[in-house]
Amino acid sequence: MENSSHGTIYGINGPVIKVRGNHAFQMYEMVLVGHDRLIGEVIRVFETETIVQVYENTTGLKPGEPVISTGKPLTVKLGPGIIGNVFDGIERPLERIAEKTGIFIKRGSIMDNLDRNKLWHVRMLARPGDYVNQGEFIAEVKETESVIHKIMVPPGIKGEVIEAVGDGEYNIDQTIVKVRDGKTIHNLSLVQEWPVREPRPYYHRLPLNIPLITGQRIIDTLFPMAKGGAAAIPGGFGTGKTLTQHQLAKWANADIIVYVGCGERGNEITEVLEDFPKLVDPRTGRPLMERTVLIGNTSNMPVAAREASIYTGITLAEYYRDMGYDVAIMADSTSRWAEALREISGRLEEMPAEEGFPAYLPSRLSEFYERAGRVENFNKTEGSVSIIGAVSPQGGDFSEPVTQNTKRFVRCFWALDKALAYTRHYPAINWTNSYSEYSQELSEWYSVNAHPEFMDKKAKISRILQEEEKLLDIVKLIGSDILPDEQKLVLETARAIRQGFLQQNAYHEQDTYVPIKKQYLMMDSILRFYEKAVKLVSIGVPVSVIRKSGAFEELIRIKYNIPNDDFSAFEDLNGRLEKILEEIEAEYKK
Image (tube, rainbow, N blue to C red; front, side):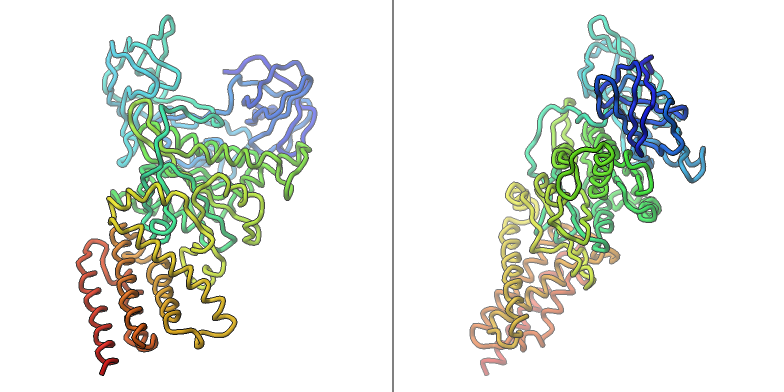
């Protein structure tokens, strides 16, 4: 693995070191730094010196220590054992490091990314004489009860199978298939390596016309996200970013979840590490960790590893996409990742751009978000990577560079609002500042799978909320008593939409997840009632009379009172509400 190229440290500035000597380092090559063999990556190459960023703590490193080339870029190992594991930003298994070094990671803790001794039961698919191309399945391993791990021919390799083992127990290093390509023979095992900064190849891109169903009403109905799309959740401290991502991880109809805790506080990551193993997968009734990968890189861990962590996460996601899985990757948060870029850029003495961030911040963000997509793989399966990035703007200021640049590369923006969070309205997604550009492409899916009128009802709900926004400005100035009854009815209906439809209780058994058909029926009931109430108001019935009937409260309680698996109760509800309005009309006409 290693070659003779090496240099000598002559300058150290935090995680950035300068190397001189007789060397032939390459850009983005992985190197081993110092006597402790710390992991680093070449980020600049000059004629007489090389700049390396080190992914570990450089305390105690001295000028004169050697820097050794490995001859390959920063790569991750891809094979059975990833699912259910907890890694740091450069795919070192944290649990196994803790067993070896204690609760703090010791410097130079080079450890196998995946367990090389564990035996996996392999079911062989390839036979001698078969011709295989890149991406084709040659074997299967039951990685967890929820995930079948498909062993693929690595990208760039094709040829005739000349040897294949039988079904049985093998570790990740044992050769299971030999492929001859011309005069070259490739020994294929259960594992392959891939450089994290390079997107994995696929056959071709597919249109983003299938939604990522989350069971969260404000997302699925008003601001839907497509499978293979990219979304951002920006919000200040305490607005519920992490809980929203937990809900998405638990309920989104993705097969695999990759959660990257990037630069968040240690106790917050600890919470995630404690909570995820306890979460039950609603699809199988088994632990959610059986289809989840966690990458933890806290704010007190080496800053350069934070910069690498989202590339590690997206590479793992692409690997499972290649097997034909739908993968959702949660990056929490890209702001902390951008701060790592800023710190390294400052130590490199680069010219700062807006708010001290490097000028290449937009291109790095685009590199990450544009690795999302729904694709047809070389093995004829379809897979997707959906990226949901949390953004933590300081002071909740959405005009800062990370939020603004993120908006350029995502088509779905779920803006969290501190004012909503303070009133205990969760998810605290502001329906005025949020948007989704996927709605048009997803409209056909909703028409076929939810209801032909789904998009029409959604537009009506949005119009009522927009009208409420305008009326509230007037109410602040002159009070609500002066408004005509038609506008008072809009305010009351919008309140029912906000509290009964947009607000959702993550801890309520019935309300934590709502199927898409129930979401449509809830909208339908609210709008039916509103349209009939408009007719009453037009003949002079005061809104106060309708309010006293308790009908609005009944609409708000739909989310708790009607079960998710029996929609017949909606007919009874609509009949009851209609009867209330008929009685009010009859009373008024007397």
